[in-house]
Image (cartoon, rainbow, N blue to C red):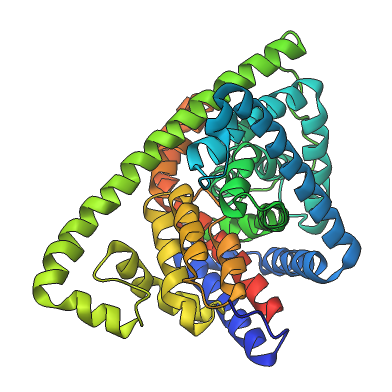
Amino acid sequence: MTGSNGFDFLSLLRGLLGMAVVLGIAWLFSADRKRIDWKLVASGIFLQVLMALAILYVPFVGVFFEFLGRIFVRMISFTQEGVSFLLGPYASRDQGTVFLIHSLTSLIFFSALVSLLYYWGILQRIVRAFSWFLRRFMRSISGTEGLVVAGNVFLGMTEAPLMVKNYIPKMSKSEIFLVMVSGMGTIAGTVMGAYIGMLGGGDPSQQVFFAKHLLSASVMAAPAAIVLAKMFYPQTEKTSDEEVSVETKSEHKNAIEALASGTSLGVRLMVNIAGMLLVFIALVALVNYFCEGVIGRYTGLNDWIAQATGGKSEGLTIQFMFGVIMSPLMWLIGVPTDDMVTVGSLLGQKTVLNEFVAYFQMQQWKSAGVFIYEKSVLMSTYLLCGFANISSIGMLLGGLSILAPEKRSLIAGLGFKSMIAGALVSVLSAAVIGMILG
């Protein structure tokens, strides 16, 4: 793969254009364009750019995120000790990386750790500190919103709202929408290990690299989620400046119970994700059988597509169609021209299927040398980092409706827009990173 040549004026222009397009889409979807708080938008974009610059070019910040990444990688290695005990020689990577064994199993250990950290109150303190930081920069958001957005950086879209569950029934439409977008636009700490193991394979240096950027992508998503949510649905009611108390009580009586509960949740999460991946990848194969094996074969489209793409696409596949549809947006945000269809395809798969399918495809293409530029791999890492997909709408509706049953119809009506805004969060982060990388 070809590396980046460093910052240049063209990348700056394309990045700015991509950011303008994302904000323009949000403006078009806005429920009240005249009430958009442009000061809030400017402060959020400034904070996101500042974070990206610090992570990429300020040594001590980059070292800090790398240190956190190494902690995640070390946790993955501890998971593999448990896997080796259970599976013996079948846990070896000698025959290659097995996704179910070497990546998904980390979900169980990470879920147990998150449950334990929540029981001890450590996670709540970290969330509260990050919420305070966000509110200092973006003063227009309420204390409840700040806590939920910060919580989504570390927890899942259905777990983070539990920290402020007593306040959710009183939230306005704009506040509810921000809760939903922040859930769609970020990822949970419990699945971070699976992504790292998938993308890094058995190479520790690659695992640290992707851990660092997945962490930074999730942190950068927080201000972007606030910006886009408040553009879609501007705050028309006065927000409260009072400090909101985070839910600190754990339902568990002791640390062992917390570990056991987290483990059980991790097992269910692992089985659920494995099942979804099996079904979604099988569905893609089914669609490709008809598109490529029947339509493309008998119309000659397969040969034309293979020739036009230089062999990067074998024919009329769903991956190729996603790539073509998304490629104009990929050019706008600064993806190198040779990789536009490839990266666009990943975004399409993430939105229609889920991020696990997209990251799995990204890892396969990366190993096969499909990517021409390293910049495209890094931008894809940020672009796919989020839960914004069709199936997440149901998960979000189910989780929030339990906490605020009287707002069920409102939450259901906001579902599709929250997915679009959540997808734009990741696109905005990728545009910022691409602009700075050159």
